[in-house]
Amino acid sequence: MQSGAKWAIGGTLVLLAVVGIRVGMIYRERNAPEKPVAAPERRKIADDDLVFLRKKRQSSMADAKELNGSALWVSAGGQMDYYPVTGKHVDYAKTSGTLLGAEKLVVKDFVEQVAPKSATHRVPGGDRQALMLFTLPASDTPEKVYGVPVGYHESGLYTFYLDEIFFYEDPHELYKHWGPEIWKAIDSHQIILGMSERETQLALGQVSKSVSNDYGNRLVVYANLGKPIAVTYVQNKATAFRPDQGF
Image (cartoon, rainbow, N blue to C red; front, side, top):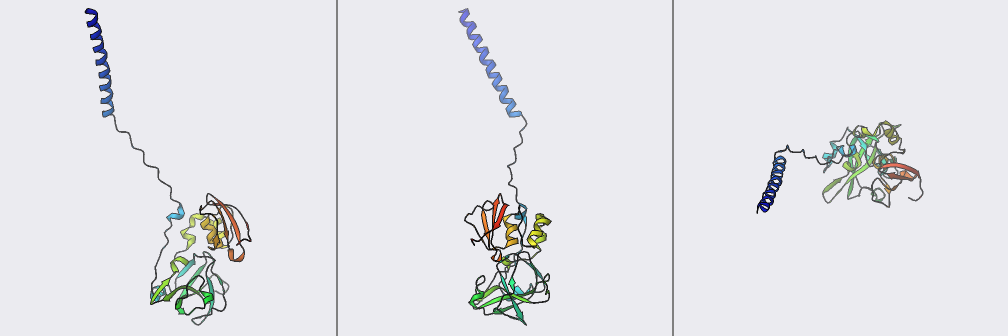
């Protein structure tokens, strides 16, 4: 009996010790200072995506004419042909050139004119086109006035593409983080290694094609006003480029 009692007492003491340790651990856990919760990792936003591009959404000729006298810069480089102007009449019969990316122009006025089918490739003809009259201050003839289609009228309504064709603010300032070397290439409409797709598009024009939708990791061929250039991108940096005849 004495031996059994000793075993019982010993077992009880062990159990009490285990329980005491567990109670102590629970107490420490409940009274310990809270560990700071790690903040979720934030995706870094690219500098280009932080640029705010103004939109004006014109819906009438009066809206468009609010731009008279102001400077615009070309966003849709390599797409829009422009024509000579006599008085306020646009001569669709011959083109004076194609608007180039980041090119500065000064708005003179807006007019309406029935367009031939040959002038409706980029902007529909409707029952008449809306054309913007402008000058090119950096050209050899800074006072010469030209006209470019920027919208059309049909069924009593106007549709304008000014927001898609132009920057309302100087892109050299909007994208100044690109740096002087990139901007020198863009303004001379050339490509250099390391340029992103957006930078190249402004330099060589928006008319391009690619067999891949993996933006920044693909081969893109730019029409480049009849002198196609194929550019390879890796992680949105141009790693190689060459003339191409497949456009």
